[in-house]
Image (cartoon, rainbow, N blue to C red; front, side, top):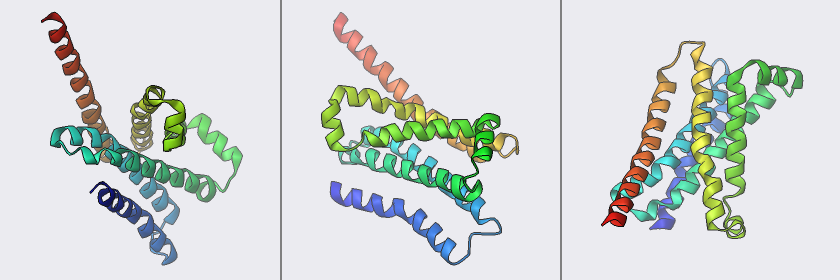
Length: 203
């Protein structure tokens, strides 16, 4: 069951990339293909990142513990699409003109947020393999992977700030609302666990 779920997740997560690849080969990405590629890869990176954070609440609420491995799978796909997003910006949008890239980093705050999110996701991706988990130890690994709660706000903030000047806030605010709900669930769950422990200790 777990294997089938993971295979299905890999297939579904690969479809956006295959669709973009097909669009590029058939010259069917609109009037500004680079912008389309940037937008789509960035959106899917956010989708998979938030989906990875949704696995724990979904698993807890449904009791379907076999969903747990999907968090890692979805998180790695989020990182992969973020790398594609950054690569398109670097090679196609800015043509590796480092003066333009450095100007963006210093004058456009949303670019800095995006870079910070990508670097955070890089740390998470590098520490995801099982051999690294064993080397780090479970407790240390858990501490490092709490960075997911930093990467997601940075990524959403990147998107929100990008659209702020254009007054196109509908989609970024939806992402922000979903993120707030997912993080809020964790805060409430932790407070309940603390209250339960306190009640047991005082009993």
